[in-house]
Length: 312
Image (cartoon, rainbow, N blue to C red; front, side, top):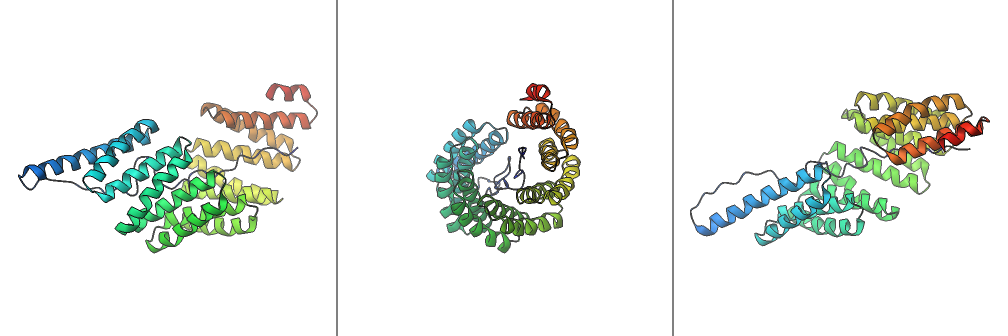
């Protein structure tokens, strides 16, 4: 029985933004330089807008997505009122990110698509690329790979144009993920290998581990378990080095899955049983369930049905 492999698109695939900063956000300091009431009012509104966006970002970083949405909505209203197009784009992007995070992809697309033409109008190429990538990620997550590919492929040349090497790697990785999902493993490997070369070049250790895991999963899916092990085993010490418990647990589980599939149940158990306490420690319920199922499956396959039932 083939065990479940928890594939990793963690880290680099989600490089659409970071938790505490919007890549679109311009950091500026504002001072009042005139005494007119109108200018004071405008400066006051600008300062309020800055503070709202700062607060919304903090809320987003603390996973308080509903509160962040409310704060970004206030910011958006002020940005439109004072005709601050940059902050209008920032607020729209932030709303898109939050709605995507709470599982409302259509709302996310609506706000990302509000941000995109503003960024294009402002000539913000970096922000445009981030937003294109974010739209692609939404389509990817809702099972529309061709639409995802369309947006990822628009983002890629812009990332190259602005010299964003990490962004180029993210786009290449995401394109690889789409090809993998639509059953084109060789195309997937081609893009993953390009991404891997870049993340190594820029010394992005988490990104390196994530892409190694992605490459391994492709090899596992096309019946090349030794190649899969080779890449999973390169990823594991990097996850440990960067203290990414999720990455460690995922990769331990994946290595166990490969050993089980090639008829080495004791080796499989060794890895599954290392993964399980980490999954529990992280309160990753789906990961715990998958790993318990995998352990139960191994015991079932070696003629220990009662032991298997303890895990199922």
